[in-house]
Image (cartoon, rainbow, N blue to C red; front, side, top):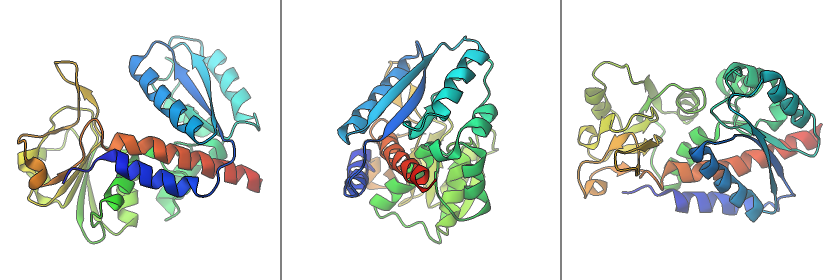
Length: 277
């Protein structure tokens, strides 16, 4: 079965829209001159405006001074008319991910990167504001009825916004979870022992579909540019009819499509947290 992202995203958005969203405002810190970032920004803008919200772009040069970035950041962080903040990568040269995580208002943290929201996720079963891509993968599995409880799941990747939160999200849903990465020995042999494989390394073809056991599911979160300029994932699909043997999400058109739907949900959650005071 092919796990296409659009049906899952639309079903999730329909549930969100049923609540009657207020006018939500998202500030996106956007690095100038990055073509892929421009594409992601336009997708966010289109979705938020579809639900009556507004996307506020805060542009910054990748080689700009840290003081300038933090002045902009602190201003938006304290602006009560802004309900959510996202800082797109790549960060400015002198800005670290850790600094952003410790400085962002946890109630405006639409991508779940703050130390507070990470702490809630890892130290409890509370899933208040969770990284969008990681939650998007879970929603994709749920939409297509892929069983998670009691299954063996392998997460290939250990980033703070995808691999590690996915480990906890799947564990919360009673999967038995293993975390691997690009330096795991015999990774190709390892993947065949799992019912669910989520791969997010940013390395094209790091997993061959022939290594996946019959009936297993692969959620491919990798986005890579092939030699011909087309987009491809981390999973190399080796047969035209592979979707008859295994379940997998295509790239493009798979898990990434669900990510922005989760972003809108998280923005709404941020709004609710701020109304609580």
